[in-house]
Image (cartoon, rainbow, N blue to C red):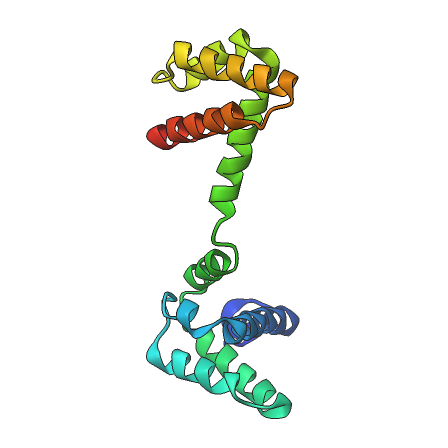
Length: 165
């Protein structure tokens, strides 16, 4: 650990940083082994994480302090990013799903102006197919039928957005 005279940091700031690194270590210890394999860590750090998993409270605290000392020499940015991906793997998929839902609802509510807006974003959109899916969807809604066409519209939108991604 660096001392204040070496880096210009106060002891308090160094301690806060070290506690953040220790908390990162605690989160790594709580992850399943299959996720840890994807992390850019040295073997010594992997061994310390594995050891901490089987320890009781007091020994685990000491091991976490040791692990924090090892993590200081690891690429913390890459580890934090890999941890976020391990904890929230489908965040991008969920965001895309919500965006497609918004477009579907907008197309059903606005019709032709929304189609024009979509074509400006995704030129590969087939106007006639889009009109037919919207028309069938609205008809199913009025008749109280299951939303088969709305699902087809969603699938078509998903395929369109996947093609531009």
